[in-house]
Length: 82
Image (tube, rainbow, N blue to C red; front, side, top):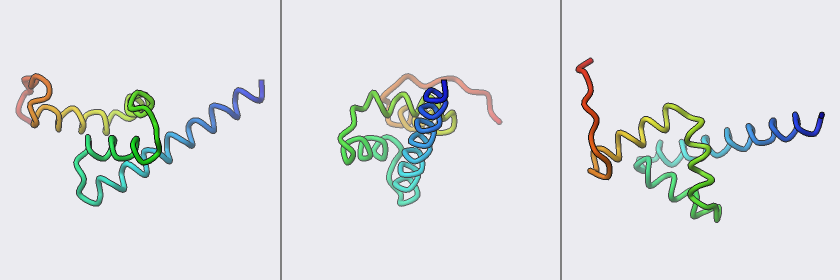
């Protein structure tokens, strides 16, 4: 039972580390999508693995979605003015 707790804690730590490194790319002016792809390439990870981590971060997920809309990669959602 203790092993599961340790595994979850390790996965969370890794997720936080990954998010931190991706945030570093973004802070340097790299677009969100490029930052994620660069991180995956640099660390020899499948993009699907990074996708699972992105799903856990609503802010990163929203920013990537917005960027994809601006690049016409996905259909734009109609939003109410804020």
